[in-house]
Length: 261
Image: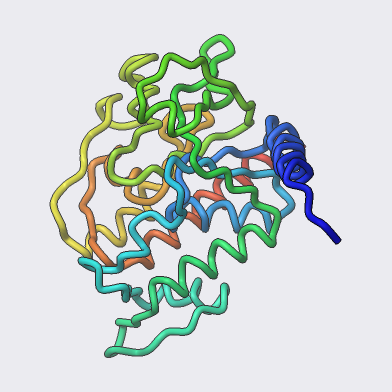
């Protein structure tokens, strides 16, 4: 059989266009494909929720790929180990309460589990703005990352979602857009982004789960974005809290979706 280059092009363009159009209306849209965002997406998709993740970079995984300072091992605590068991990632006991796992195995397995559960990941797409209906945030405004990087004046496209998840990590870029465009009307003590505190792994691991909640009507924060928005500590290369935060975000949204049935 001879391969036709134009047929290859048509196959890619038609298949991607069909996928993108199918996911232009969603139950949940997640900004950021780091460990928290992917874990949230995986937990939602397992419950038959229509969910897509939009990632600015070519690769998914956020900071998990690099472990700590490019030593691609990561640490989870006792509770985080339960999620590694759930997604079938191997780990080693370093000492009681500390478990190490291969960073590449962990994030690649999580991405595989998520996509096989039904999550669609759209990489190389940046979130440029949010879409409003009245005072309600109801979707994301998207553009190619290359357009953003080149500062080209190219109008974006939009997708609609019942709920949004801010999973962009330390910068909390989606929430920053909301504050910039709508004003300091967040569900935080100040109404604004409180800001991330210095490293304290013990506190940060707990706080990231506690702060995983609605930060603006229909917009949930997870992972380091949660601690940045609500004002808590960072925790470095211990990733159990990230995974548990993603799981909690999914749980909170599932409760809301069930009340709408």
